Image (cartoon, rainbow over all chains, first blue to last red; front, side, top):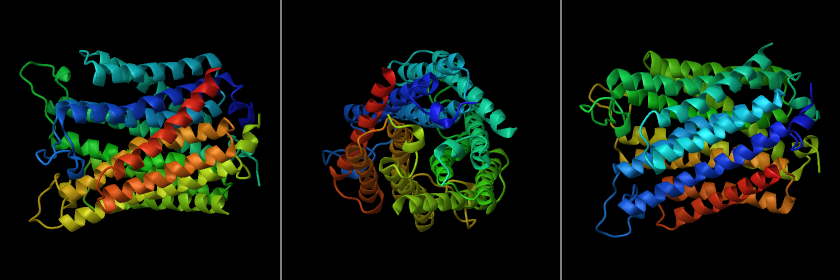
Length: 152
Length: 152
Length: 152
């Protein structure tokens, strides 16, 4: 088995691919905050008294556009962050490069699609469900491989 | 001190145990989404207009069964995800194997118990509080060890 | 380029600094749960029937003090957890020590300030916005560096 020295080096194509997709997904997640802010200013929906820009405004928590972006963002926390942890451990199990790289691609692309059809342009179901389950399936597969490699 | 080569190898029993419990907890966390979906369909509580399966339904945000699972899920984000980060760094401080392995077990088992008594079968307090504090205490201990090893 | 052996060792000042700030920020995040609990007991605002300590109380979800701490905590999940993932990968790109250490410091200090001005003593804007954007900017910079190092 390869040593962690080689596995966590950018000369390992599996680690390189993981690194690339984590970078892309981190940027994508951080953009959700800005997308929320855009919706807050557009709809004048602020959650804190100190954020109100006019004495005529009041705090508001129920704008559907703001809440939609927040739900998409929370879904990222629930799915992308566990992928970051399990993906790194999966790299350390020294998986076959072709499979691993395509799993990372599947997670990366499907989570971007999930955001687009959920919070940017609302597309009818099952588009969001499909994007959700592709990433979920790939992450569960990696987690099972990690458990198997550690359990025996 | 052992080098990262050995510390992040599955031949290191501490890393092996960490890897196992991260895998188990990732699966557990991802199941929370499915548990939320089950409650949504059971109680016909959907948060997005495009999710409604009949024109008679309206979006709903206040079903107590759905919200309970969502609170348990959010509690996982708040506690399990920081454990993933600090656990890996704790492995890299080369801790005594017996202690480290039992800390990982304590976090893993107590977070599973937390979900069971919170979102599956509601058990009276202090069961949830106890499960919460066992995992919190173990994680804080690891974080303090990591800070100490890095501060001097 | 240095090997992962050296990069993930505490004798690498960049990794040492990263380790220190992750430890500090994990403790800070976990304290948010206790701060929420303090506010819950102070205002007798409990979200679960089994948490009510007197038959006269009812579940409540809209106390502004509790909700403020919960918003600060969620903001931590959205910003600090992605930093943990991208920071580790950034260390593995072998960045210049002076820059990297100051980026980690910027994230660590600005996220502590963010909590203080949001959830401990409310300070008028733009203090919270500034703290937010310092950490966001540093994290985005690291993510772009990680993407660049992995893309070519």
